[in-house]
Image (cartoon, rainbow, N blue to C red; front, side, top):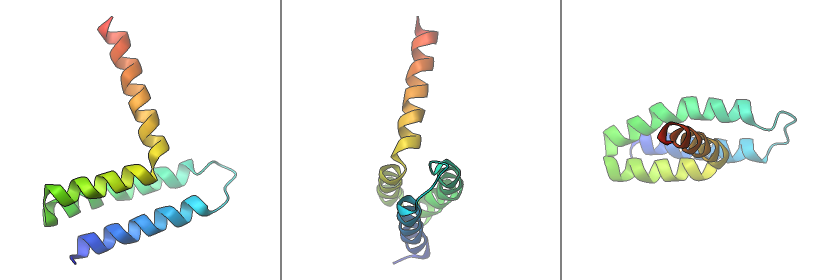
Length: 85
């Protein structure tokens, strides 16, 4: 197993542990930190292991951080509807 995949697995474990911890701030600061670390890690995985493994890690990361992804999709759809009209 390559270094990038080991780091991606550690990122996934850390993200799940953070998700299990109680938080008064609804986990958003931790989610943004995970996104900031996860994007370069995703590029590293893709560079070292190829696009198939990059898509696998992207899917796993999106399943862990589903609310930021949902809000991004909603934001994109809202702005596409405004500009498309």
